[in-house]
Structures are given as structure tokens and as C-alpha cells.
Length: 390
Image (cartoon, rainbow, N blue to C red):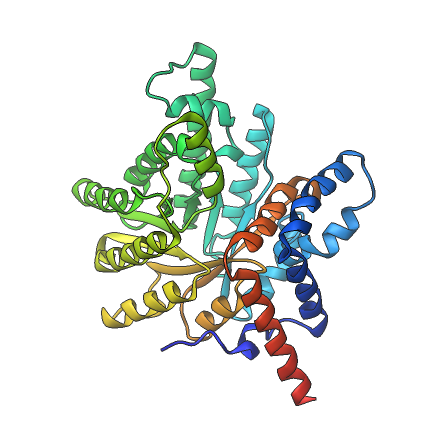
């Protein structure tokens, strides 16, 4: 069975300086109070145009991002490829509201897909629908009661054209694209579009992947239903499976608006459904391609075991593992060392504009039980190993 305890493999590409920087960073994000006060302070400093960009770029940006542009990311792409790990270029600019910005983001997503053409170092592209459309419009599209006015209908058509453009390019360039999941109150509309694109472009193999967040208690059944629909309609289902990223926001909104929470009752239920989903995906692999986006060691080990039991080669391109850049290197690098298909999400974009993403990463490391302490313990273990060899 694969082990994630080999820190020599996990940190082979990291210098002593890299390890020290990561150690200090995870120490800070392991203190909830500092993360809590750090977020508004950072935002205020940016708004006041205080000279903190350099500090951000040398610390949290360097840990979790590949660069500000696609060419900037080349060094990270090559570094990961040297260890058998692919790159998922993720243009992580958020919060735009103008149509010209949405068009520019669409072109950036397409440029990332073009970068993946005939390039095994870049196995996937990715985008968020909120990166190419107003959130308020998506919320209205999702509603069963609200109707779009003529201006909104035209806006919606432009969104569909952008997604069509991205999807057709993914198919043309043979670079599959993930459509990231978002909040439950806009997700149904995103799902409809994603599955329409699959029906059109996934006839032979999966080029369009929808994302399923298993922290929602209805998603395992959703996965099973979509598997049947795909089979009945003759296309391959493309799925990125994750636990999810909006849990606290989801619970708060359901309380505020007095509707049943879509969230699992506890972490154990989420973990159980995630693992049941992995079993389902592997059992239906003839009709599905999927990526398991997980920082959970047990789930990654389970997937390797399921593949072995079913006689699926570790290099079968229908199954990928993925983690975020700067996190869980012990999982990514040890999986790659054992010849599994592994990719890292590599966010990029101007420092100021990817700050919301970076602050979420800090939040995630603070809130996920054991995440920061595990990262720190592995860095300490590797530091001691290197000193013992000196």
C-alpha cells in the first residue's frame, strides 16, 4: 500500500529556504486569531495602496501561486513536471462585474487551454462560472420563480456563448476543462449548462468535467443520477469530486433565510459519502472519467486500493488525483512517485486580484481539522532528516 510519510520524496524539489518559508507561513495560518485580523488589515492596506505587495508576493503568493501570468508559471510547471506532476492553470481573479472583464477572463481561460495543447505537463484547464458572469444573474437564473428581463436574457446568452467557446476549445485542443462548483443557490443553473456541454462534447471521451461538492448531502444521489443520464444519452460523464469550499457560508445563509441546510450533518458523513462516491466512480469507470480533488490521506489511499482491486493501471488517463499548489505535497509527490496521474492546481494572476483566493487558502488551512499541524509536522520531519544527513 502507498505511504504518504516519505518526506524525502514529498519535498525533493524544495530547498531548505523553501521549507523555512513554508514552516513560518503554516505557523501563522495555524493561529485563527491572526488569520481573522490579518484579512481585514491586508484588504485595508491594499485599498490604501500601502507597499505590501512585495511582502505578499514573497510569502503567501509564492507558496500558493505560480505567478502573475501564464509565462510566469513556466518555472513552476517545469518543476512539477520533473516530479511527474501535471499543472492545472487556474486564473484566480475574482470579483469582476463588467462584461469586458468577463470577456477578458474567457480569453485567459482559452489561453490556458491552448498552453495545454499537446503538452502532457498541463492535463487540464479550469474555470469558475462566476469569473465570466455576474453572481446576481446566476442567482436569478437558478431561481424557479424569478424571470429574466430582456437585458438579462441578452446577458445570459453572452454567458452561454463564453462557455460554448471554452468548451469547444477544450475539445479542439484535447485539453479537458473543469467547471468549478460554487454556492448551492447558483449551482443548479451551472449544472444544467455543464451537462449540456458534456452531451455535446463528451461523445468519445470526457473533455468537460463538472464539479461535485460532497459536503452537500444530496450530491451522491446527484452523481448516480447523472451517471444514468450520461449512459442513456451516449456521452462520457466527466466529474471532479471534492469535499467543498463554501460550508460556513452555506450554513449561515440557510439559517438567515430559514430553509433546510444543504450541508451534511457532520464531517464523518461527508467523508463517508466522498468514499462511497469514489467506489461508484471506479465501478462505473467505463462510462466516466474523474479527478479526485482531495487533501485527505485516507480517501487517496482508498482510491489507489480500488484501482488495484479492479485491475486499473495507475496511469489510466480516466482517473486523476489533484491537490492545491502549496498544500499536501506529501500526497501529490508520493502518488506521482508511484506512477499515478497527479496534478496540482496552480493559481495565477496579478497579486492584488488573486488576494481573495489567497485569503481563502489561509482560512482553509485554519479551519480544516489537522491540516496545518500535518503540514508542519512533515516539514519538521524533513528538516530533521536533512540535518541528520549533513
